[in-house]
Amino acid sequence: MTNRIRFLLNDQEVSLTSIDPTATLLDYLRLSRRLTGSKEGCAEGDCGACTVLVGRLVKGQLVYESVNACIRFVGSLNACHVVTVEHLAAKDGTLHPVQQAMVDCHGSQCGFCTPGFVMSLYGLWLTNEAPTRAEIERALQGNLCRCTGYEPIVKAAEQMAETRPSALFDALTREREKIIATLNDMTSTDTIVLEGDNRTLIVPANVEALANTLAAHPKATIVAGATDVGLWVTKQMRVLNPVVFINHLNELQDITVDDAGITLGAGVSYTAAFDCLRKSIPAFGRLIERIGGQQVRNMGTLGGNIANGSPIGDTPPALIALGATVTLRSTSGTRTLLLEDFFIEYGRQDRQPGEFVERIFVPRPKASSHFAIYKISKRRDEDISALCGAFYLETEGGRVSSIRIAFGGMAGTPKRANAVEAALMGKPWSEETVQAVRDAFDADYQPLSDWRATSEYRQLTAQNLLTRFFLETSGNGQELQRFAVEVV
Image (tube, rainbow, N blue to C red; front, side, top):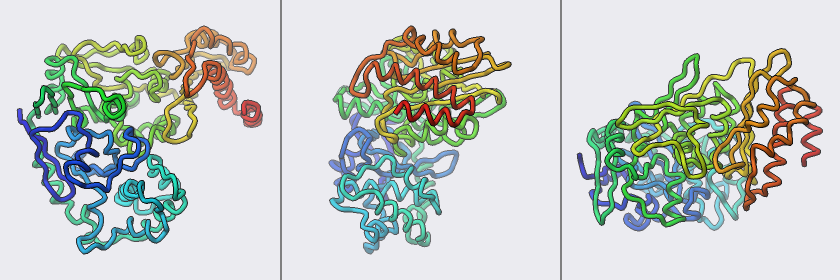
């Protein structure tokens, strides 16, 4: 074992032998390093004012991603490169093209959110030489501005794409090989353990070490992306101990595609999974584009979305409707179960002490099948679902031969609509059939009312989504348009 965390902060090496397990990167930057360009707006990963870039080695390649520093823990940064807005301008004060474009296009008024916008745009500048307007807007989903309006910022993004300075100007480009060598040197082959003030932080060396750690500390909090756990700290002020960080474990970040389906390591982020899922299951790709902002998608993981057991997690309904399985691992070995069986009741999952989610398998939908996911939220982007429904259908001779319907936000767990499915099986896939089974939702769900939606709204919307799914799969565009008008 070793007892220090090492990472790069702009152009300086940092080595820490003592840090609170839940110390956020934002607090460390502002309070310990006096790098105050990054701001705290929401402290929950919504507004983007705290955005920084974090670079890491992925299969030998240096990859930079925008992240929310307000919910990213310092303990997760070993062998990473943290880049803040202070690192962009040249040493003589010349602004980076991203910064200059914001000035030229009047992309800032009060300026509070501006550093976060600059860093999101810088991340886009590094990875996309000619972004489309849609790609620009996607990169800015996780950044909010109350006073400027977004059009000047989008114009700044379009201008910055036209300016590609030489490698001698941009620090990350100029020093790339040196940064890779430094991060390789910082990569630990030993488990990292930091202890102090009766708090313990653990960074396992590999998956086997993770299993051993959880066997010794079965009540430890596992942190992958921290997009949920971060709020336990910043909003609920919870004291977590010990904390085990797993975002660096390459063994949990593999993606395998074959004729049977897609196997995703539990540590695969939404961003990493996007291309694969979009190509194999287009509806899933569209769902991922609506999960948080770009920063959240860069941090959040599919395994984390499952393991925390939230009844309003976005991916479980889709995965359940597709017939996904989850594999759990511990020092005793592995076991695999249907994902729908993993969720027992609110706050309780079928995960034994010492077990962790290792991987998810998503069967490939049949070519003749129909699959759709509908996320209902107050905002289109960067919002939590009021409810989320997923539908998988196979027909034979015009009759329903297989149907799986799953919803989040309708019960204490993500849950299948078993009564509705039973009422549909073997019946003609027709408007008459669909209308006749709408009331069966009452046997499946008794949703709660909260500030996102009332029970009545959720129940009616679930019924309407079944009708929408029928209209879409029957190819009746006129009826779908009429239905949409009537629902509104």
